[in-house]
Length: 121
Image (cartoon, rainbow, N blue to C red; front, side):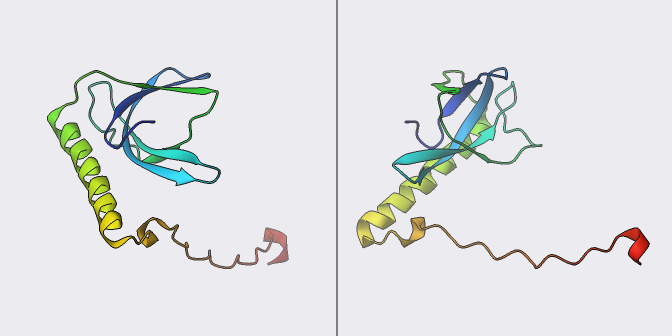
């Protein structure tokens, strides 16, 4: 399992290899986990047009640690992600309260508006 701020390559069956930065590791049901990753450019900087996305390892996706050096800006972002995770772990160890890791309820979507066809107007 990879840690926060690890630079990894994702090799999937239908695509070319892509490079990502692991921002967080989230646990899911049945002792599985999901990586929150941000795609990197070929130069190793965070891809500005993309957002962090979840990535679940599976038999169709191979994840490898990348040994290529990161630019300064990306390295600072990686260290920030690692410090944040370390701080949350320290807080849990001191208080014994896991509430910060509990899933948050998202607000319910607004009710669907009734749609009228053009001819019924």
